[in-house]
Image 1: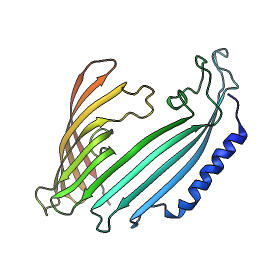
Image 2 (image 1 turned 135 degrees about the vertical axis):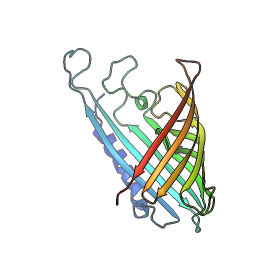
Image 3 (image 1 turned 90 degrees about the vertical axis):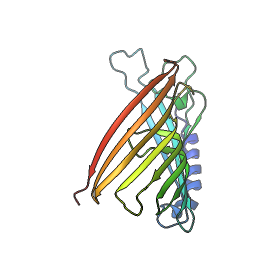
Length: 234
């Protein structure tokens, strides 16, 4: 896999030209619309230790990564939308099938381009009892970190009392950099409460149900419970 300097320079220049017209609109702030592009070149070089016959000490891998994010909202700030995605471009070619590689990864397997959507959701905000509703691809805000394609709901049943919230979410898990689609797929549902006895003190209680369906096991059900205390002294 030799490094093609001309090809890499072309990709970097093209991405820079695409980024330039939108650079001034980066940062959400109070804007009704914002968009941001970030590009990165990553070069990796192998060194062999212990078994020099396994991988070549001259092996290298060269990729260009493009990150895109953006958001939109209405003038009243009740409705919002958000997008975050990434793309990886292989600029030096891929190893022949069956060839050992120190840099094998999921986005080098099938083509020179790999794309992922990290977040893509729309949401509704309110100052009343109905606090937040969100639908789409999102990172959950409570419990163990996970990204789902699903829905999230938060309500304040004692409005306008600000010290007690209820939340629930559910959907299908998302596994990035998965070489075989369907290898790891879960269904998740969760519910809980947020208690704020003080402005700087928060207690979160949650329950999560996880249904795991993978190629290794037909079905595995998990029931987890959690408690989190958050305190900010200043």
